[in-house]
Image (cartoon, rainbow, N blue to C red; front, side, top):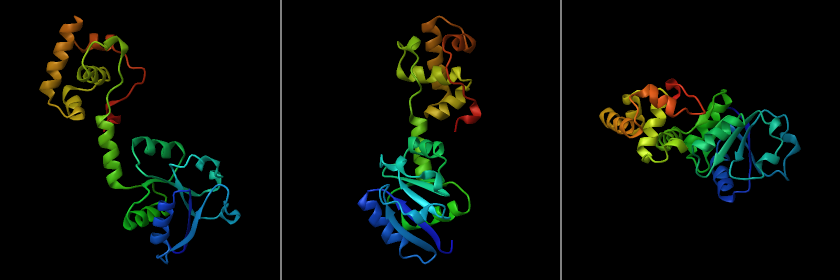
Amino acid sequence: MAGLPVLAFGRDRRWAAHLQRVLSLHGDVEWCGVFTAETFPTAAGGRRAIWLIDGDDLRSPRLPLGDAPAKVYCFRHPDVASLRTCARLAASGCLEKLASPDVLLRALRAVEAGLFAVDTSLLTRALAAERRAPAPVDNNLGHLTDRQREIVHWAAMGMSNKQIGRRLGISPETVKSHLHQVFEREGISGRVALLALHRPDEKATVDEIV
């Protein structure tokens, strides 16, 4: 990463100071400083560089983002929504603002190589949060408990008791018991009837469930 220009855009002074401390000390990075939409350097347009963008700054969309060869969004508390935002914006990475020097430099090397950069710990937390997220509530099943609605949702998606249990952190036997209670309560006799009762608007395949 010899002399690769790195620019940052945002108004977070603590983040800016952190970048200054980390990047100005490394000769393999050409640290160009921190800018805003109002102080955008004309020389930056079209340059082969990596842009670090403050994802918490609502002014960020005002930047001429189409000129950036590689955009890495940085957030104070990145989460699943942050990762999705980065994907939607065709970003090259998603990082925590105060990521350690080692994480930040490895991320820049990954982006230079054409990879998507994300801190492993962030990805782990994001996936854990995704697993904990409650299933969508079906108004037709509002009389069931939260756990029963979750199990009905994933069962209607085609997941087995074992897969549901792994996702929710409970045993397959507990899943089976909840389903049996739902069957009795709804007066139905199996998953086919359950699918007719609960048809999710958005289809998902088991392969998409991590």
